[in-house]
Each structure stands twice: as structure tokens, then as C-alpha cells.
Length: 188
Image 1 (cartoon, rainbow, N blue to C red):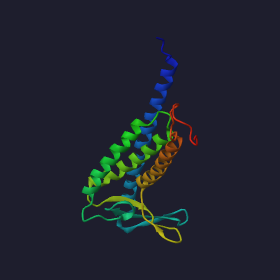
Image 2 (spheres, helix red, strand yellow):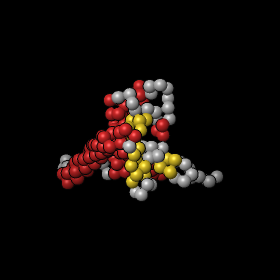
Image 3 (cartoon, helix red, strand yellow):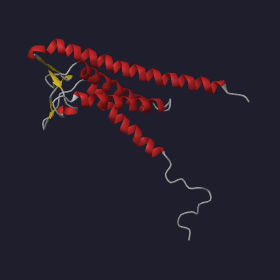
Image 4 (cartoon, rainbow, N blue to C red):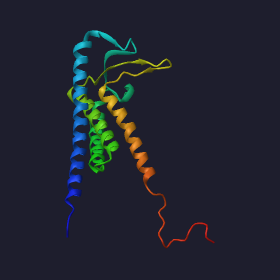
């Protein structure tokens, strides 16, 4: 039996690329998130605030002990969010492992969400003040968009991309496969 080594080499390259993309994105999001939160803590302590882009993006330090958009669950919700986050990271890690080496949308989306989740998990584990947020609130004209951070941006973008990935995967699956022995529809 002859094995085409070109296929194996191409497959190995694709698998290495998959893991390289995942590791770089996860590590990059975590590093940028932790660096930006450190910057915010140093720069915005004591009630100081800044404005970026001509005032479009206010920069204010806040600590979010709740869920997304400041939703609160009890007095010390971090003990609820820590295990939920760990479970989510493990689930997304499974999706990443199962992703085909050429499914770049799935690889990028899961890596972004994992990186963002780990960035916010770090804050929840290190102290009870909550997750460091500093971007916003942003006035959209009809509402104030809640304050957020780099991890939140990665989670949001990654979740949208993951939804698109799952939706397109569902569209690509053949619908109602019929066996060759099955009668044609409409035959009477």
C-alpha cells in the first residue's frame, strides 16, 4: 500500500496552522486584555477619565461584578461566573479541537471567545472587585452602550463569528438524504 506523503505533509501543515492561529489569537487577546486593564487601572484611578476619537469613546474605570452589560446576580456572583466560564472555555476548547484544519472561521471565532473569557476570568479569580471595564459608556443617541473592555470585544466578535460558522455549517449539510431504494417524492 502506497501512502501519498504530499497529502500527509499538507495535512500536517494545515493542523499546525490551525493550532498556530488558535494559540496566537488566544494568547494575543489575553495579553492585550490584561495589558489594557493594567493601563486603565494606572491611568484612570482616582476618578480620572479620558475621551478618544473626539469624545466618541469615553474612557472611564469601572468594575463589573455582574455578567455582560452589568447584569447582577447576588452579592458575590464571581463564584457563579468562575465555574460557568471554566465550563464555557472547556466547551469552546472542544469545538476548537474538533474544528477542521481548514475551517478558519470556526478556529478564529472559538479562539477569540476563549481568549476573552480567559481575560475576564483572570479578573474574577484575582479579586472580588469584578472585571475591569474602561471603554464607555458610549452614547449611541438612543441609548448608552454599557462600559466594556478588550475581552468583551473579543467575546462579542467571536460569538457573532461562531454563530455564522454554525449557521453556514448547517446550510452546507445535505437535507433529507434519500437512499437509492427510496421512492421518488410525488410518485403515486
